[in-house]
Image (tube, rainbow, N blue to C red; front, side, top):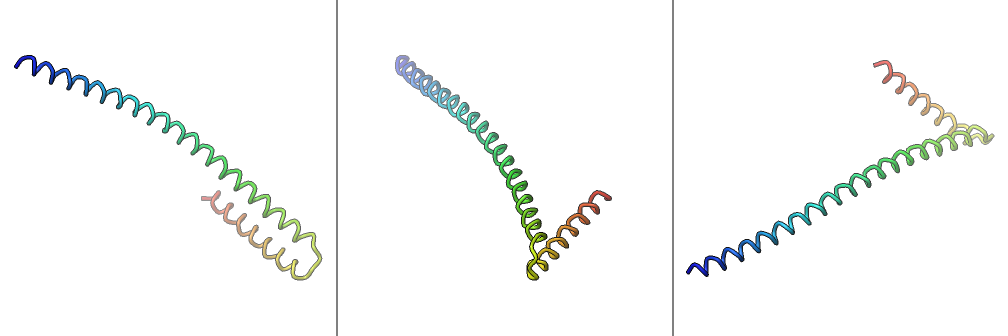
Length: 98
């Protein structure tokens, strides 16, 4: 009987050891994935900022092109764009004054 209990105890100890090993491996993988996620989030933020800057540059180029053109239809577009920019500037000023 005593021998049976020892065998059972040994199997349980072995199983616990295996579980602990798997837990530690999973924990290491989790930490690695956490670091990768943080890195990807930083990259994503940088890409969003770059996209925002490029979008602003594109809008400025469209505005510059509209201001340079002599066609009547383009003048209307240029005026609309200028009005939009003026509204955005007014909104920024209003936010700064708060």
